[in-house]
Amino acid sequence: MNINKIAIIGLGLIGGSFALALKQSGFRGEITGIGRSEENLLRAREKKMIDSFSTDHADGVQNADLVILSSPIGQFEDIVNNMKNNLKTGAIVTDVGSVKTSIVKKLDAIMPEGVSFVGAHPIAGKECSGIDASTADLFRNAKCIITPSSRSADHAIDEVIRIWESAGAVILHMSPEEHDMIFAAVSHLPHVIAYATVNTIMEVNPNILHFGGTGLKDTSRIALSPADLWRDICAFNKDDVLQVLKKFSSSISHMIDLVDTSDWSGLEKEFKRAQEARKLIASD
Image (cartoon, rainbow, N blue to C red; front, side):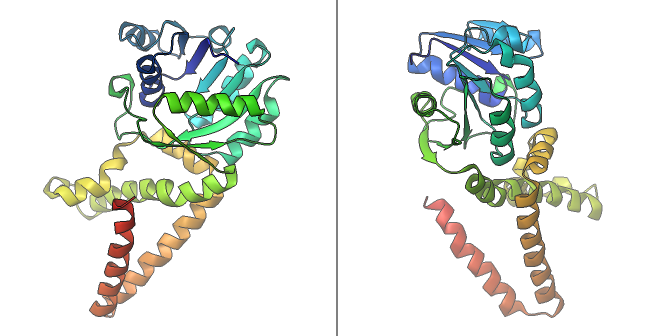
């Protein structure tokens, strides 16, 4: 199948960067941007991210070979229900969501006959959001997890892989369930901790945040991420997020006990254990 028209729903950081990456890669077909803000869409066209735009989902996806859901995941089901009657036979729908199991199940169930949904999650982003943060190189050498279901057609999976590779991504395959377990720990948990860290400092004294140096900035940077986005991620991956939060709570409780009993050698061992593990990220 040749992809001649791509519709991107949601032209924020990820959707905008994807459009720019496709343009830079030499994609010669039409890219349509779909969103609620006509002002945002006009700016996207001025920036030459897109060739056309629509504020109506059903109108924007007409004749699209590939539709990419790049809005907050809590909106996916309503968007697909609004546009599904205008999806042509053979069209492919994919997404960029950080949660896969519930999304794949929900969207698979409402896809029209002859339309394939292929779950995808590019591991790329910034703490800032919006179209002005978009860059053509955001996905260069970044991992992109593909999580097809048993209903995803082989040709659809191949096309989604190809389009992400053209954007510069390195493709990995996982089941939706494995994806959600892993990212609850390595992504969703750190975001919750970042929010909690800032809130804790505010509870100690709301006037002392400005004393924080590089360490605080590094550990709290992702607390600048959109709150509604991460609310939805936690809601859609509730069971896995809850499981890792309980493990984190247990780890914190252990450290509280070590400090409370003045077990400084035990605390140092915990720090060293984390220090050695942290090196695995640096060397990846």
